[in-house]
Every structure is written in structure tokens, then in C-alpha cells.
Image (cartoon, one colour):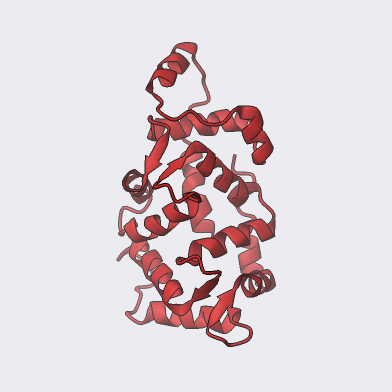
Length: 215
């Protein structure tokens, strides 16, 4: 969970706070997609207008067209994990941001998800994370999905991860996950089971609060 939030928080810190009219005019001519108005985005998210302006400039710095496709998203995300292969995890993360399944992420998609991850309630954050892990969107997390997620995370962290991971580490991680989360032992984890189990875990609760004031 913290991994998802942390990478995007690093990006927001690189945003230039200075605003210049000439820059704005140039940006307007370059952008293919114009986002919803500030008032509407402020109502939809937990960011102020000033914060939204800062985030928008950072988003357009990486995505001048106003939208980002999956390949570009992977390139941006991989910059944070130079010693590993982040492409598979970035694919899952892209799908979580692309709620409309349009094949691209608009600023509205980005800032709505970021608002949940940074300023949302505990339940909202856990629901978003559950949807990330629920790859096939059937309302359950099964062992195959969790194995795919865990392997993607291990690949992303790379060979320099310490301690050195054993080949069976993903399987052990998944078994531990289901031992904790699958309360009725039916082989899948529901949203209710996921939220309940996470709320019982102090470390998870602590990680959900790490980035609340990052912007």
C-alpha cells in the first residue's frame, strides 16, 4: 500500500510551484485533453484548488497531451525502480487508475485515485487496494491473482532486494496472506474479509497513514 502512494508522492514533490502566463498559453495549445474545471475537481476530491493546480502542472510535465497511455505510464513508474522490472506491477496499477477501461489515464482519473490514497478514509484506501489486487474484477481475490501481484512486486524490487528472496518466497507470502485474510477458508478473499483483516493489523494501519500530509 505504501509503495503505491510513495511513488506518486515523489512525483508531486518535483512540481514547480511558479506559474507564468506565457507557460499557460503554451500549455493550452499543446494539451489534447482538457480536464474538468477546478471547482468540479475540488468537489470530487479532497484537494484544494491550489493543490490541484500544482498536481496538474506536474501531470502535464510528464504527459503534455493531457492523457497517459499504459506504455508511458510504465516508463514513468519504472524510473523509481531502476534495479528491477516494474512493468508488470505498473500494468496492474494502470488498470486500477483507468477505471473507465479506456486504455488511458486522464488527469481526473489520476487525481481522484491520488485523493483516495492520500486523503481518503481507511475504508476508501482499503477498497482501492482491494480493487488493485482483484485483477479480474469479480469481487474476490484468489490465490492466482495474489501470486501474480506478489511476483510483480518482487520483480519490481529487483535482485538487490535484501534479504535475498528465495524462489518459493512468493508462494509463502500468498499462503500467509490467505491464512490471515480468508476467514471462512473458502479459497478466496472478499472485500469485507480484506477490510476486516487489514484493520486488525497495526502495521497496515500505520502504513495507510504515512502519506496523508505529503502534499
